Length: 478
Image (tube, rainbow, N blue to C red; front, side):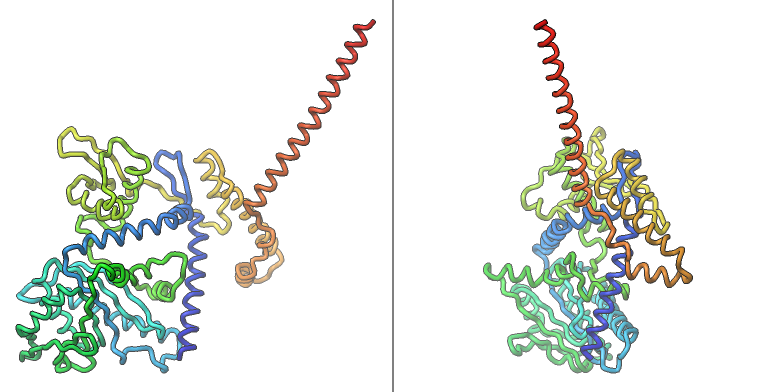
């Protein structure tokens, strides 16, 4: 069973790698042009830039989420799937394992959707969440939630939504990690009598301590395999760092760059979004991707370019959680969106100057779909930018090398499809590809040759000069 799962993971990673390579090659053929036509760049260059600033953005995101959690009731929920829905030895093929993971995902979707729509006192739940899905060694699905409630009055509604959904028997275990003050409130709820209605009868639930954990008793009357327990997080100053690690462990795992995890490979194949946020998580009425882009652009304007028209002086704490700071500016309408543009204004006076921060549709896109069309992209780009970078020059040369190899081999082949497959697999052109190091070496050699030429010419001139001087001396003697 383990060997099959290992082969399944390896196969998923290989497919993910192939997909990544195709995406990278395609991203080189997508050329972005600015409206004023004085700057152009490829999608691959944008992705390179994003990878450079990625860690800083994740750090800002973590600090911003921490700010939202301040003075709120937070539950750190982990839910596991019922063992009856796990991948078994009977699932002997990769498509069967795919179907099993999809089935588990659908169970979690139903579980979380029910919690959100569950009514208590004729009201649905209203809370913010971050959800991260994870796979075990046996490739079974778990879900990790950071659920943020506005106040303690929402706790009873929240707990009942979890308990009632257990009737379906699709979820096996739910761990609710909470801090001591919140646990005291939960304890009071159960001591006063925590009752739920099931099949037209009322069941009173109790809280019992077992093995250092507080478990909800009498829940088995609702169905087999149900297990809900509370884990208390220590809030002493020494352990604060551990709590932060516990809270953001899975969120950070989902955002690890340059490392292909089994979750990344399998979820990409099955089209499962690993990390999910509640709608308008930052409560600013702006789409999350636009908020992040505005935050990044505004940070550069304030700290890098220091635009005098934007009078913002964020404190050191606000600098760390710049996404949260940007969301606050949207709430105050210091930043606001009109059509495709984000504007900044200092105040609400009629003569206040509007400064454009971000144009969400600033670039026109051209895609070159030919097999060897990189050259066309680089030439078009250099034409707009009025120069060609070393990187683009090397790519252009390599593009010519690949095309020469491809079309030379194509003339001698009978089966085009088989030739295409072998060409992509064997890559016969690799040994002759050009590099930036070679380009630099060639330039150095060229400059040396030019210097040698100049030195030879200088020597000739000097000889002529001395010969002329001697001639003049002889002439004077006569």
